[in-house]
View 1 (cartoon, helix red, strand yellow):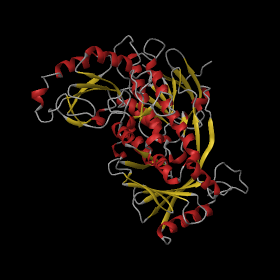
View 2 (view 1 turned 120 degrees about the vertical axis):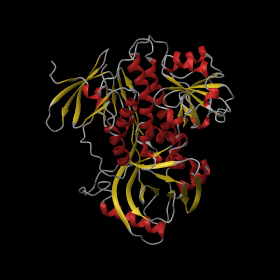
View 3 (view 1 turned 120 degrees about the horizontal axis):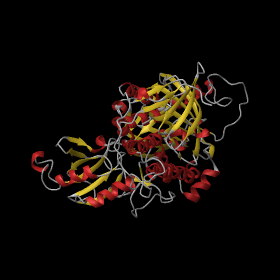
View 4 (view 1 turned 90 degrees about the vertical axis):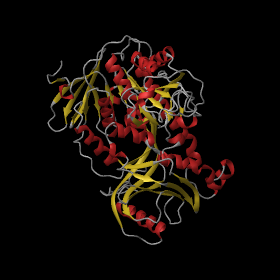
Length: 571
């Protein structure tokens, strides 16, 4: 069986390759770059679900490499909103650390082959697989590669998307920010967003802590992208608008405003960022897929497109692995397994983009009579401040963990959906923990041999059958392993058409004793049964893998180094 080809070795492409390796699927990662990860101001805010995903695919330092925020505050002349984050951990991770951590994880993964300095120029696909041609960026040598599937993780200007002729409609300049990372000692601990600060020149400024005493500072700039009116400064963060000198003026004015006097600081890096809103018309074309920035762009109001890219990788990895092992990814029955990726992830990101469109008129900085008019019509800034917090923290409609109650690979169920989501997606935090499609909470569990663990640590490799059995933590495993529902549940797990393991927990929200939950490898709930109901669990598993399909023995995975490579030119 040919390996899966991943194009792009950014965080999303590397995460997808590592996730597939966890499923024993070999990958070839083709990247146009050299593999270096220079330090820069870009960063990502991780929630509990994305941090757990990075940990289980081989980057256990994702949390320790991040800054843990204890609070988030919004100011406008005075403190308008403060959110205590003690019970909802929020991690702020520099993107270069994330990329380096994922590359380090690749070194111990023989199923992943990384090919740098290779630019994809041609793509062909047929019933049995995908062929791509690359040219070396240094020597120009042409090479053909063969894979079972291909995933384009090659960024906003994706070559794969263009070769597949997939449209990428949207808006090119929704929000503009100047960004800098500064090593400085600020007089507050948590993250802060300051609307209309008292110093002159800024409409909105924010400070978000990073590790090692570093802060990321952001300034919202006027909308649109003006044409440069003067020769480009090589140190400019916005040619013709924000030069190196004007950026330094912003840094000193902002630090002085927050500290009362200018503190000692070290400016580490700077950049400009124009937030776009774009959504690919399709995430799948035959055996080819798009993920991350190649599939969607958002970033207004502090939203985290990279976090959604990691969710793309988590959602797609188990589907590709199941199709790779079961040969059910083509037109034969079971093909909707792969269609579910587009239905779920495109629906979730589309709901976020609609939420931004609805919120931007309420949250865009205004002054004078325009601000007064908006306050009279739709309410003051204090009323809408929680929406700004959702964007910065990656929570709620702008970044919370999605639920998929109505996708082809889900199960029927009438559950409330997010407003504007057109029935395809919702938010896990809005639904009961037993609703189909929600992200399951992290709970203490026991494996079938009595080993204690946490539920999220067990995700990623197989489906899970979780039995709610009060008292199992009190009694020794030898007393309950062969009693009650356990023997029957072990038989059902072996009979399912998907790989599954049995776990036991003392309690689960909204579920009574002897409830059994079938959970996908990405942590989303397929459905719930009462007791070890074999027929019900088999039906749920069939739906999760896209419908009944003929099963074949899973082939032994080939080592990544043996990925088929065709050096001879084609006619």
